[in-house]
Length: 471
Image (cartoon, rainbow, N blue to C red; front, side, top):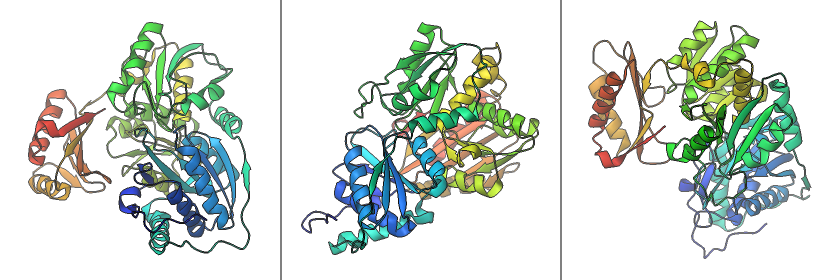
């Protein structure tokens, strides 16, 4: 195994290892040497005898994936390399093959970034509380010593396997679109991995697909691969209107999230998609449990209850959602960030499967998408507002002090601070990785929502220039 040059500056793993994954700038924060150490540590912590890897279209991804594989093989593990794939395609491989896995991607981050999303067999996530801290500790120890753990007696093998056809076939078994009416759809891959997966998944269906930015390019020449930012779906909106399409789909860089635009070119809130898919799952499994994170619209649990299901509220973040899926036996879960989780997909998130559900629902009736989702448009929402602050904990405590004794409200701290009234709520929570407070507010009417939003922001004490709104 290659070892770090003792004269080189030490990799700052505190900045590199996040709550749910590894992510940083290449080569400034990490490189193939670091990736090799992560591969060795991954095998040590998981005990994997065989593992699967995949990577996105970023320029640095193939080298990082190969280095990780070298580290893993030096510890005696065999590696199945799937090559180019989306993150949910890697989850498919982990689930179908029963292997732990590592996906090399920085999702929606700019081109200079890269990262690793790791999971155990069956796509069970690895986060700080479930192995990532142990992996980081080993990498730090080996980096400090300048000498990694001695290699195994036998070096593992490397094989290559294209899982795209299997992945696409599996998704098509979960949603039947063969009998839907013909639909015209615009798909914006954002030069990310949906340009690789969508043609295979959607092939042969009664769909007229208008591709937008399907060319794989990790430099993202057309727009950032982050559809949560309204600026990045403008091209999709315009194309949907110009084509007279039935809907538009936008995927992020690693194609595990899917955003939807209706036939008018208007964004459909991820909460509405969560509710729509939840009702489809409840049609198949009456009375089932459905998860929603605590900043989805109140319309989501209301719709689930109205359909006879059991809504369960969770923290924000895929590791929490997936753990709760396993604990509760939930059949589906959705987040405001357009991550959608399915029991039929090893409790993992897949934007492509959510998209197939939307297409199946729309194609089974004549009503436009705007009419199908209007029933979930019950509240006015602020979207997520990010405030840059020097001391997030102190600001959060100040807001808590003001609100905790007000009459007629409930306060909980499942994830940050959530304060609820009869027809409104707000959640204020710190970022896991940046000095930010994230505010979401919702109310029955726009005037109440804006007043609530402005009052909380005033308590946070951030000037207008320090606030950015997403969604």
